[in-house]
Image 1 (tube, rainbow, N blue to C red):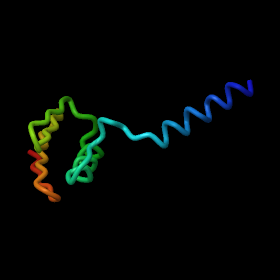
Image 2 (image 1 turned 90 degrees about the vertical axis):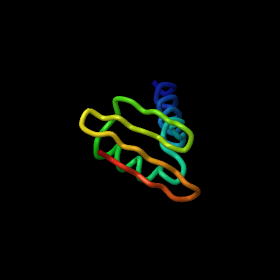
Image 3 (image 1 turned 30 degrees about the vertical axis):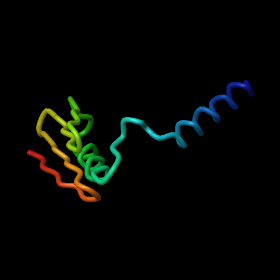
Image 4 (image 1 turned 135 degrees about the horizontal axis):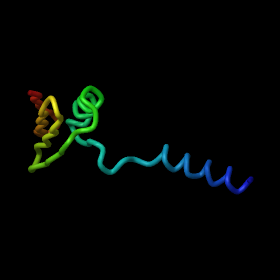
Length: 75
């Protein structure tokens, strides 16, 4: 039982300290995270250069990083 508790604690700590490799990054990360919070998991995600497009059932969000700034369009 003790081994199970230690293993669970180690796995929990690793999950909390790790970063999701698929999570948004760069200058648009905060805007993308806000859209994901609002609309939920996307049906599709595509990236073309510095532009990432999220497709939800009710909206399409386009995030374009230019240098250290971000422009977004959600329709």
